[in-house]
Image (cartoon, rainbow, N blue to C red; front, side, top):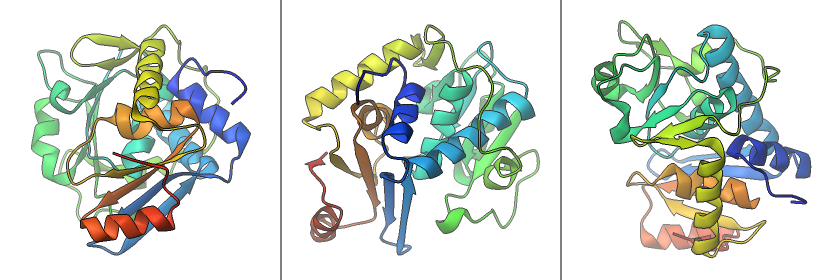
Length: 246
């Protein structure tokens, strides 16, 4: 990249300018036989749709907040980057519930009760199924994220998020530029290089800074792998030309 982006959404925009067809996220689930690859352009479309859902659909902004209760997955990337693009601060994982209600929640179906504990005005549930298939059944009081988000435009034309605005609560606020700086430092410490490919096993729940924001800030890409043994991880690493592993 010709210059260092100051925010994570700016890093996505830089990746799009550099090569919109280059893969940014490749996701494997060996139990389901799934391999999904998102180019910079495809990820950007999902991010724009999510940001438009938040801004145009739910009328949210920097004074609001989103609870995100999702594992490492390409749809999680769309949700998190959509929130940052729209300037809606994120309460992730353990920080999702607290004394202050959130305005919107994104969660897997099995974490719907935890999402309700965050007292959101709107709840979007994700099945994380291959090919972004919709939920077979949507619980009362919630919407299916992949159905709802497809109604919104794949270009985000609202004002960009303020770099000095809050991006993250953990539970203390982290501003957009501070989150980007943290991700850039993590990328440097990991040994990942610009243009590299990072392999991340995701049977645990890795920090989004490590698996999503850091590669983006560095101009690298990520391969997420679920339900694979060590031998299969080695084979995927070779196939995907991985340069760095967690």
